[in-house]
Length: 497
Image (cartoon, rainbow, N blue to C red; front, side):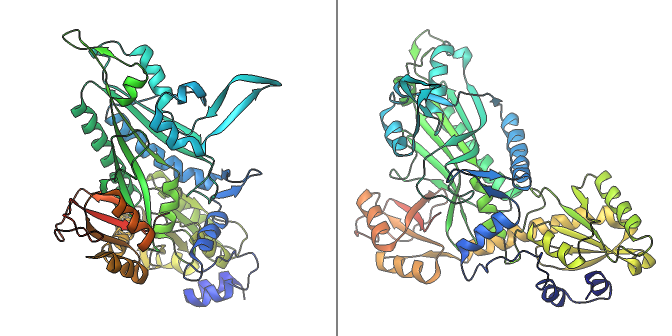
């Protein structure tokens, strides 16, 4: 059957998909209920987000995947500049002697470091680490340029890639090289630095919730889970469709430990030499993995309109008939002129293939127009999040599309919020925590005494790591569920990517 004739004749979406399945050009993906990990990999590859390179663990970001990252970058970069930060660029290589200056930091990253030992054909006098993160580079720079209280605060950000030699790799979630931004700041007082750390965590929370439609839990990492060398690490934790956790952005307060290790000091207003207080914070392309796993379905990607590279795809139906392509082109031009990120597909691919392709790529809204629509002065808008079809007057299309996109954005957030709220369970003993996790997944919230041996017991016996000590605390009970001693905090536990 001709797909164009089928769809123009009013065939149902289910019938259309059955026909499409016979088209060898339509890419099939594994059902997420059958194998979630394979589903994720299928979506990454078949939605044309990534390709594999010739080095294990190093992935190629294809144009569509990079366009998502560009939209995230643009949003974050605007917020960073609004909060007084400037972009800089630090070197790729770190001398081993420089990395060794902060003991806790180097120990935390040592297993993941990759080293350059030869330059050209000559052995180097000192090993050079390919940056896993850039605290030491910023500190070395600040030790030379920070002199007076008038120089502070210094609030920098850089966009770059980093290399961490992971043993197990997956697209977006755990690559050896990945793209990110890393913010680094120094301040005259601890209070200013802590306020900076909290402010930047809120920027990440806004990015997840407003741009990516991913609800978050804001909190502080435990001593065991905090960043190497930090005094405090704050995090935003998101729940994926399979009810596992993803750490989506972190913000760290370093105190003055790095400053003292690197000899950074400034003269205060009384001409006393003081060590500045430092922060660091980062969000990476890992969050794209979170975006896929939060909203995706068995047809592929589902992208929130705010971050989608293509918000609307215009598809002419029965385009071989007179006037159809011309009218579709008019709609496309009108949407583009109205500031919508729109595209049109007038290729000779079948209608069924086009529908499957743009569903796979997660385009939030598909606008279809055929001969009968033109006669009636309407077109049909199909939402990607719920496949709802809305008949829209052609004259009102540019006014209605922003409303529809807003509805898709809110619908995705609400659905993800329900997934989080419905899979958040209290537990009052280690056995109960284990049983809840095994039966339901999600986040298990318990009280905790604060002792590392109880945190380790939860990991070893219940299979969960601490996700965070949430800022919004509840007093579930007075005792730790592991040891029975007095409790200090409520903690969220979960299985994480």
